[in-house]
Length: 255
Length: 255
Image (cartoon, rainbow over all chains, first blue to last red; front, side, top):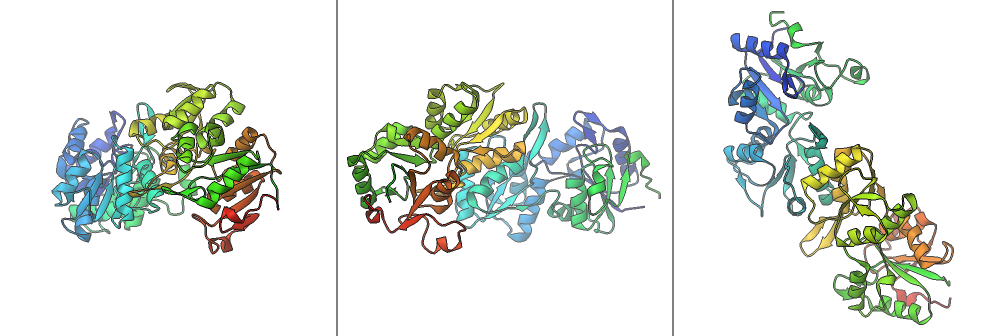
């Protein structure tokens, strides 16, 4: 099958921890050679696109900041559609703050339109309290992503879903999620790529995030068995990925 | 009806915010006069019993630290039954830390038997991470109480249920709750009071916490309409309180 644009997950798809997946790296080189647009789509909102691209170049992946789309950028773009130059209370790190600011949104701690929550490894009771109070006062609650836990050298550590749970519990309000498996990040990424839903393929290793996001966005999907989801895991899913492959070496761009 | 011991809620039952409820204060004076044992039972784990008693004496309620039983003390007593002198990682404030220490438990941050979580207005990502990792390593997860939010001058601010939600989400583990509406706090309070389930009355203003805790513990219950729960609210409950009254002036100790 031939697609005009590719959305590609990072961890488990392009690399595993500190090790590149060679078939995936070769695949992206091939995309670049053929001038096929691609965008790396990540739920990680803590880094700027330049930092993510730099990390990818360390694995010899052809990538600059234009090739990266984070859940923070998806949130900022979504907000711009809803309310340009919004006043936003932010829980998050550098990447999220930069994405919101670059999209023209203004950080504030009172009288805000939105409470935007991304992973913040310096989150405190005061921040959770402030977010909960602002949501109770009418601000719309948006989360970059809902990942419950993230792998680290110490084991599984709290992801943004953990911080969101604290705020949702205190404010009795569920957020809108921008990241995978929701479709907002996919819709915004396609806008950036300049392709259409029909012409774009979503590639990832995690059925529950990458593939479901593609399905929710109406895209064809390719699951690679290089990370989280195994063939066995797929036996219980309702909607299968459009394609499954051992590795991206099996994907023929000429098919 | 005549009972030999009384468990009594605080906020909404003895006082509302900074104002005493006179009928309740008179009721406790009457208990004291008749030498009927009573224990104030609170989900607040942040204060020591002496601090709670001092606050009550400010409302002219006859109370010293022996009359106070917090969710932190219930947790400490419960732990002592399960594993005396346990190693415990603590998220919480002065009251919880003192209760655990006085019961012989040892605070530690590695190789612990239990992770005990109470309201901590200085909770951080690092504490939530540490708790999550220890639970994943096999520590038993215990929460003093699950109150989602607590009233304050600023509005409803995050309660311990909010912190617990963050840890439960990251560790994919639900805690054992000691506080109301669970029965652990009631069972431990009766132990302290020296009465029996049949001889003890639970009094409170909140059906969802006080009365349900009494019901779960097998006690007779008295709901006073001086706080959270209204007569209308009771129309939808499965199990009604044993008694309901406008105020404790209507409760006749000679009946």
